[in-house]
Length: 107
Image (cartoon, rainbow, N blue to C red; front, top):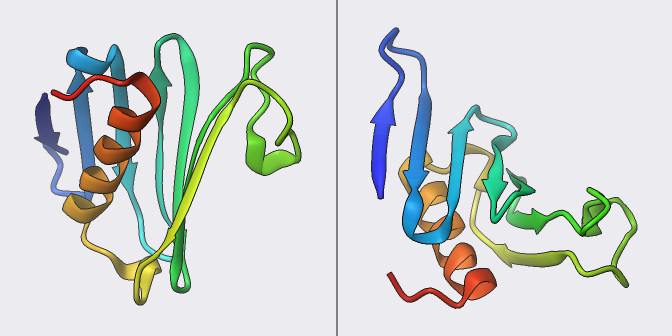
């Protein structure tokens, strides 16, 4: 896995994770968000208030958090105190943990 910060000093972390066939960017506060792909499907991470969520779209591109819970997408959520202000490194750790579960890769 390779993590790069934004060259212009903005809070943006770009992650290339070939071991999961994934890449994503994480940025922001209130909410902290992550967008990218894994195994050719869109992924979305969001952290706000005291919770985070992680989605992988189904075969049609629909996210479970958009109401497609009975699809072949993937969804996880958890608690994190003051999640909207979590350090981006913590968001990356949560996303990687979810990627391990989704792909079954223990990298």
